[in-house]
Image (cartoon, rainbow, N blue to C red):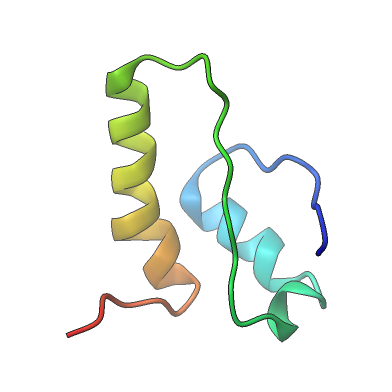
Length: 64
């Protein structure tokens, strides 16, 4: 298991940093952790961005 530094910013910047990391390119699974102090609307926005922007930028797509 590898713990990476916090990545904060727009999805395209986060995707660029992750794809530039040699260890990230070798894994089959990734877990993203969010702070416990956000409001519900903030979590909804982050999760929506992860599903619609970050995930696809990393090559992820929903199963069909």
